[in-house]
Image 1 (cartoon, helix red, strand yellow):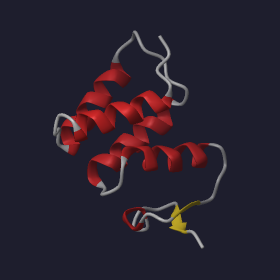
Image 2 (image 1 turned 30 degrees about the vertical axis):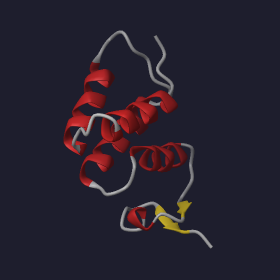
Image 3 (image 1 turned 60 degrees about the vertical axis):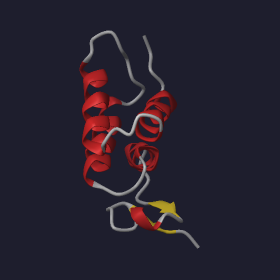
Image 4 (image 1 turned 180 degrees about the horizontal axis):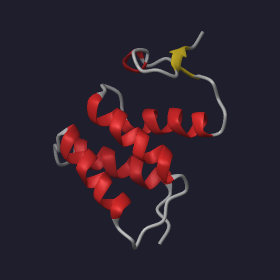
Length: 95
């Protein structure tokens, strides 16, 4: 079964906002999905890197996934307005 990236972003949002999961617990849940043989992902390596960044960072999982997906496709940087991302390599201030 294919789990599109946006499904993982929604899952992170629900686990955090509705259930109060810690970043570590959300990351562990995402890793379990990544390890499950039943699921396929569009870009597993980018998701793995995004989960690691999310667990130790301050920004949303979706932001890290955007950056990792862009980098996997050759983007040198990802522009952002999110100050939490500016400390993370690969993100630069937009504007």
